[in-house]
Image 1 (cartoon, rainbow, N blue to C red):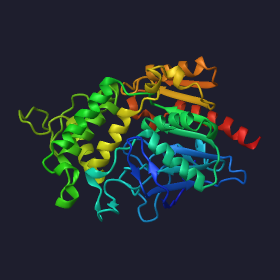
Image 2: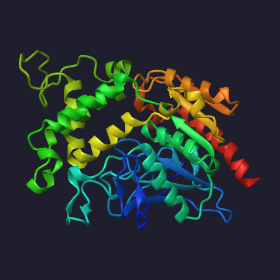
Image 3: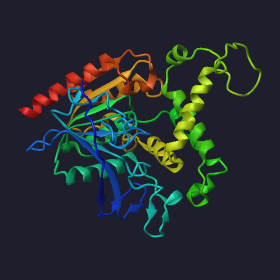
Image 4: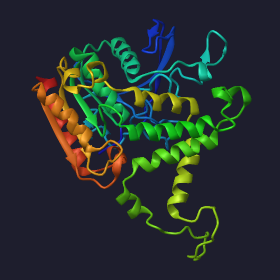
Length: 382
């Protein structure tokens, strides 16, 4: 399968104020967008891909000036791939509040001429979906053939089917959940606390101080990364292997608090890398959006009632070793949809990689998606 090759993002500016669930409003804002493939004359072959916590609009392909920057779902999206860009017009949108070009805490507040920082309003999954709908409007897309996402992206796909039921043909929810468990909210709170307690955080206005709460971000990412991997996957990758000196064979404990185990080295590496490119205020915003998502809340916790007005067909996929968003949560969603006799395809894939499996090359997983998109392609042609 070939790569989609060189791609280029575009910045879309919106002047109509966007009312947010918090009661705040954004008077004007930018969204970074990438598209792949060709929109057909009927505008019926469009697929929206919604991103997870630390991803962006850069779903597939590479940049001419940065060929090592490969799209985060490049193994899935492209010519001849499960989401085939020879057949579909694919859109990736960087969400509001992110740090990859869309308006967020790092952007200049037109009222002050300074970065929003802590003044940027709290955003929700529903706010993102409303902003994405305006992107669709700008392309003249009245209805998506499919809206797809993994993890937090899956929440957005589900929200699309709830908020714009007539604008979604298929809703594809992968490794996701209709709401976070108390344990998940707790993990997010510990990660946020690491950032908030970093002396370089400065109440969220660290830009003015020329610093970054790197220590807090590093710990937040380490906490998150532990939850993305399964116990079996960590055992296979690292076990209790000790980190040996470069070129050395030392296999003894050093009786110190420095890095001794390979898994420690891996977590610190991931934390350092994340702190280099991600924004702390964005991390706070996005994890809080995860916490707030709960479409059943307005229905006294009844998910079946919340889904009553949906019209899409659904593909729900989960992974057996994903303890962050366990298959139980996906089955809960499937049952609620079946209560309304919705057409649902459910795949529970026995993969060892934990939550991160939705990003990896698992043949069974990709074959499920390929077959499902074949079906959508037939509908589009019809």
